[in-house]
Image (cartoon, rainbow, N blue to C red; front, side, top):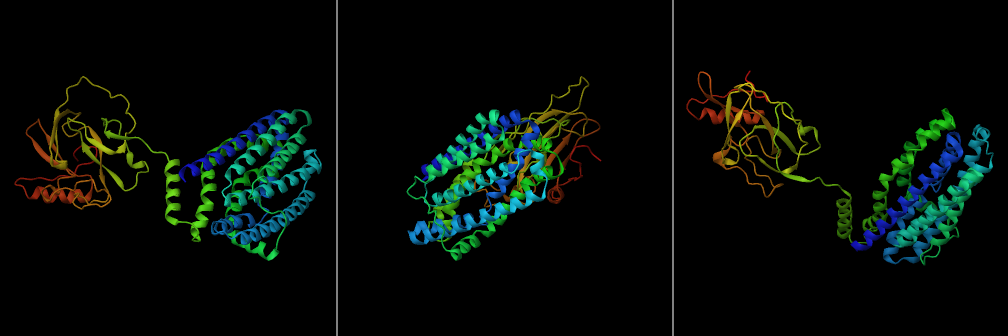
Length: 472
């Protein structure tokens, strides 16, 4: 199961990346052969193809939802009725979309400004009809698990369609691009029709078609809205600017969209399984495991560090600005030995520290965390400042670290004898007229714990210090 999922996902991702790469090469060739103005007019024609892919009005999306459970249960007749009804809605939507585009172009001036006449929009509408047929076949073959036919068909459409366009655009201009895409679409449909699970091409009952379209209407509305958001910039340039500006702007859009094709390929494989599991036709636990494994495989994991590097007081590192949930930083004072920080990635290296030849007083620091005081001697700029670094404490614990957290079973909680000393750090000053020791508390809860701790000792003194370490 895992191997088939990986094979199907990589096959779809490879076909989509190949299609996007070929379309990018076709765009570069069109920009060189047609110029910026011609490229802008070509991208305006592509808007017809982008919106025409949604002319099924939710029928293909409804087929994605209804067909996988019927196939999983072995209900062949019901699946066939659903496919025929969806095909009826798709054909009707393609005809309505063609009439709408014709009416919009007749009221505008794009046909005259492009210099291509009505032949170019007519060929693009034919490409829309082929694209709807391809999407209909893809929805049916996905439900039956025939992903190799989908991958090869989409690859044929990209290689032949874009390849013929790249070769012919230098001779016949935009007509080479249009006829190349039509040839690629015909070859893709012909290859998908070789599958034993090919869908019927005879329209079915209108009531069944509307039932399928109603089922997929929420997904259709969402995807159509995202398309409108992604294409409003090109529509504005096509309406308010010239073709030259649209061509320059559209050249980089193809390359920036390549990042989304790997998760889209995984979702295309997972969606039929999720739809079948939602209606009880598939085991939900195994489906959930497949989704989690896919998310884990696509996520990027940072390398974790075992030790915290040395930090400089002149270059404060602010890790709280990074998206690390349920943790917050506290300021500690550096000891002689490096502090272990096993759950967090290593911060960037600081700039080189400036060294001064002036003598500095020495500061001895004691950290009672984990119940093991660690002593070290460190020079500082004044008797009230030491060199800080960042340590971490779980936000699930309270100020003293006394509450056991079930989220980290390997973390040992502080004992009752060390409560109140897990977070506050002792600061000792030597030199001058005498010596003194105080607790440094970065938070209110730690301050209260330090007050209780110091008041229990004879001659204890508690004084609030800023995070920089200087006495107020």
